[in-house]
Image 1 (cartoon, rainbow, N blue to C red):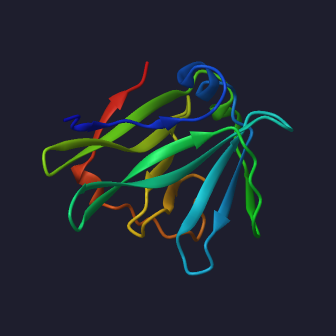
Image 2: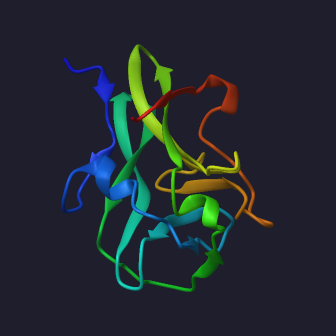
Length: 158
């Protein structure tokens, strides 16, 4: 039985080189009741990675959110755009955030750290199939990860 639940990469190319491309803008899709359905990282006018959460059932009545990445631009409702500073266009780093639940290791968050130390944090949300966002672009969005932020271990992806 596999006790590690990794990010799901559904985009073309290898994950790390694609994610390391300069990020110019972020788009979020609010759910209408608070949480976000997805976050899009724009690398150019028509190049993006959309991040959302999928549920993994560990055992009866215990599901966890794992981040899923795709290069499909699904627009199914109103969105909010945030332009990013130059710190996310060169020499930024990426951290994978994992949590342990019932003996399972779950990749449930990702942090983009700009070369000036500012962060963009994207985690599986407390509500199923949602994500939550914090950092320099979060404005009035509520940061509500599935677990207390102190329960996640951060490890560099590179």
